[in-house]
Image 1: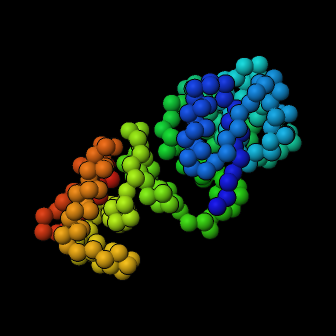
Image 2: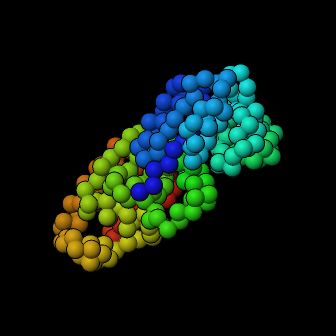
Image 3: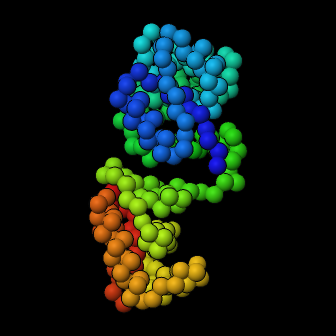
Length: 230
């Protein structure tokens, strides 16, 4: 698994710590700036794979540091801004930034932008897709977890496999026979009664995230994962 180094140039300590901690959960190494008067030296020593820059910074703004970085590096740059000015986005693109995100932002949006930039720049599209977004939650295929603003839940292999099958065919009824057959083909034997138990357990865990109502029972037909409702 590739581990990328990210330089987060953000002077708000609370926001920096939150972003660093959450990105660490996705196996990114996140570094900050100790001296905002000497960003270029720290950038040069670290040699990050991606730079995330806030526009409003002490000493010099993010645009200044973007110009300095672009004068000697093509490293991808993602801008953060708390200002609602279209000119900020225009200026960012003109200076050579790869993307722009406005505060406050949902973490799923940030991670999606980071992944898209890294895939495009470092060409690792052949890696399996391990993250999926569903109704504002991030579904991690490697960790068997579901995460949103309410927290993170861990699912058993059967529970996760059922959820995966449902959300990959969201807004479509998946029959009980299809679910059972898929689990059987995947060498996870499951009977009709066991399927009911696992779906009920899955719903109970999703309730912690406020998502339980999005798995619907279609009497006499099967189950359906709805897309809307977050």
